[in-house]
Image 1 (tube, rainbow, N blue to C red):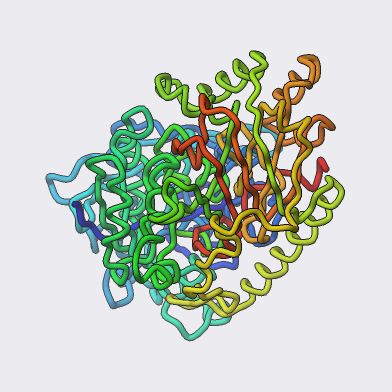
Image 2: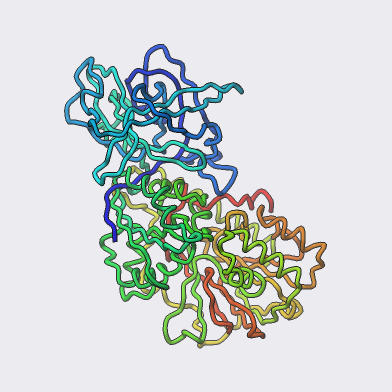
Amino acid sequence: MENSSNTSSAQNLLLTLNASYSKAILTDEGILIQSEHNICHSITEQSDSKEDTAGRSESSTSLISCIACLDDLENETSIENLIPMNTLIPYGRILNARYLNESKVPPNKFCADIRQPSSSSNISSRSSTKLMEEGQETNKELRTPFLSENENGEQIESFQLKNFDRNEYSIELSFVIPSGDDIVAKKINLSISYIPSMTTNKSVVEEIMLRSYKNVNRNRSILVIINPHGGKGKAKLLFEKKAKPILIASNCSLEIIHTKYSRHALDIAKDLDITKYDVIACASGDGIPYEVINGLYQRPDRADAFNKLTITQVPCGSGNAMSISCHWTDNPSHAALCLLKSVERRIDLMCCSQVSYMDDCPRLSFLSQTFGVIAESDINTEFIRWMGPIRFNLGVAYNVFQGKKYPCDIFVRYASKSKQELKDHYLKHKRRAELESERSNERVPNSRCKDPLEYTVTEGDFELKYPLRDGIPDDWERLNPEITENLNIFYTGKMPYISADTNFFPAALPSDGTFDLIITDVRTPITKITPILLSLDKGSHVLHPEVIHSKITAYKMIPKISDSIISVDGERFPVEPLQVEIMPKLCKTLLRNGCYVDSKFDKIC
């Protein structure tokens, strides 16, 4: 077990300018580093949401699409020069701020007079940033005089800024900037002009932090559970290199545990002292979140556990559906930023019951359940997991074209049966969620704020409406046997993305009290199957008339063959009758801007 303090975070767009003097002021958008006689050149991206603190990306797997406007930072040896002036650092990119000392900076002093690098400090490098303005590229130098160490001995690049004037505050600022496909933590020393007309009666540092963590609980206590075997065996390296430096740069409490055996994360969650943590971050694929959720479910104080803890994912596995759907990215560095900046929201879970474990405890599912082609494509391709997410797509295509049948009986309790009813349901509940998010954003933030819309879980929320032993209720509908006898895809799910390029459940919503059912059968000719498979990335496969797509609150699937696979959240389950029902708002997670990634279902339906 490792202990460390501090984390990271920030989003939005880095506005890079030019100059080399050293004043900085607070603005509505961020901290502006000023100098006289400089013109501001900004890199911006229009957001489709006024509350979007990160700037929406066109791809679900990229957090900050304006990264393309910046060159990768390439290190060269340099012992002088400064960060470009007239740079606006958005609050969404700021991780932490603290006073370098309690007094104001003396006039005509360099920042180096306050904090000199030791002789043993590493000499940092010079990086180049390209600015885009009216189609023209301009090279701007971004140099760092030395690398400094934080309390844990970890290095973060530091910039030194000169020419401090009277009546300014000496502040150390941690933030993130783009570097290739990733974001990286940086630290600078600034002299900030405090502008009373723009602030409350808080201190300068507190004002910066309030603006940087609007409506977000900052200084979160985070337990990171790493599956060292995840992500083709690279999960630990991915977390240590891409996510941890960002978390360390912020001021959160961080504790790390590595799993040592199968189901270890489940045992960790069952025995955890829940008072010590706010967030459990699973540095893994989707298997560790599944184990953590079920470990909490098996606790005697499970209601307290689900009220206290937030479950999220730092994507370090081959399947990262939770992060893609909730953080809108499968990049560990961007997800680390979202871990710090995203708001807590409750999502529905699904409770799975089978005879094999009826006397033990049902199983909770946060992602999906499947029988037939999808299950076999997932579980039976474990031997090529090294290929990454593409293994799943190859498996689906192979099994569909084989035309294998998976006969079963299916009984369903519908919420929205037809595609028109489903569309109406989706638009209604999406708009309601947007209004609730707007109401939540209007509240006055503080360092330990509680959402007034917060739902409190009680023991009664774990009670099943449809216990397995009670049989099939009278108001459930049986699907047409002509379909179920020829079934090839049976898939139910609660999150839109099941992999980076597979938007399988585009109508999924976090807490609408339903989950999605998708079914196809082998009678569909190859000429129609092909366009269905080719549209999985866009989510438009559900529009094809050959695809059954409904919103449901419960179902029972009774397989008629034993030589097959049932998969729940990627875990292999017994091939026997499976009964599932929705459990509304049971789990807290972190959602970027308070919602799932935009599946664009409202634009295609």
